[in-house]
Amino acid sequence: MRRRVLWVKGLKAYESEPMPWKTWKRDMTLGALALLVLITGWLLWPKDEEALPGISYRPVYVDAREMLHLTQVLSSDALAGRASGTPGNEAARGFIHKRFEEIGLLPLPGFSAYTHTFPIVPREADADPIIGANLVGFIPGRTPGEGPALLITAHYDHLGIREGEIYNGADDNASGASALVAVAEYFALHRPRHDMIIAALDAEEIGLLGARALARMEGLGLSRVALNMNFDMVGRSEAGELYVAGTYHTPQLVPVMEAVAEGAPVTLLLGHDRPEDGPNDWTLQSDHGVFHQAGLPILYFGVEDHPGYHQPSDEFDALTLDFFVRAADTLVMAALAVDGELPQIHTLRRSPAPEADQPEGNAP
Ligand SMILES: [Zn+2]
Image (cartoon, rainbow, N blue to C red):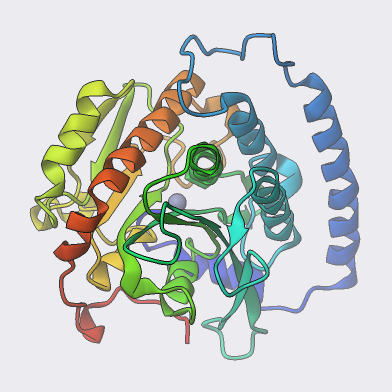
């Protein structure tokens, strides 16, 4: 998320040359450092009875401690900005995979694993292709395998290292990936009415490639998916404002989200989804864009751009943690509201956009 200018640059930085021995050595050192950081982080993290730093809000739905810890881990220097195809990205995926297991997500029906890989073809002709990987989990509803399903997504990749600086991407999108796990945990404990597909997506920053791979995936059952909820940048707002975009395209969702906004512990604002918003129209600017183009209703949740947006200063310490926890509770409330209306929402699909209008990308 969100603006496409940086994608080409990102790809070039990683894929134009084979990895020399020195880089391997650096990666080994980084690996050892990663372990140290994670162990220290775990020891220093407040135990159950202690208050979380900077948080006065007591969450109703989410496990804030686990969510913030995962965010801190994903955005630590040890993971080196989680660029697709790098060891830091793989490590990030490993931590999310562990949480998927811990909270009891099932693999998608018909599959035995969460991990679904896809090739990424670099723009430079002589560069080696890399492999992207989505993690997809499943929460059965009351009639598993039948009726409409809700697809909830968040990307876990970020920009990596550029000119020696680590882009930690704490808000973009360690926050959304961790909130995804927190929301999934709630529904794993409180069975939803309808099936839920929980997807942590790779390669968003280089062209929404994980979302494209998911949309094409055999066995996903996209025709059953009534709506895509996408979380991208939900952890940093001094104003305490979370946006939900997408109701412009599906006006029937306006009252559903307005009802959520009324009871939400953040200021939930509808918008950033009209053509006349120009660059502030977020309809195609993160993974939900792929599902919007496929004709699905979408609800994208995120904050207004802030000074840390796509900067090395997008760090864990700059998150507004009290807001983040409130936002995560709001996301559960929104998912509950959508789950309740899912059969009606499933009738609101549009026909897919013609290929020419699809957002550009380099995936096969
Ligand atoms: Zn993002």
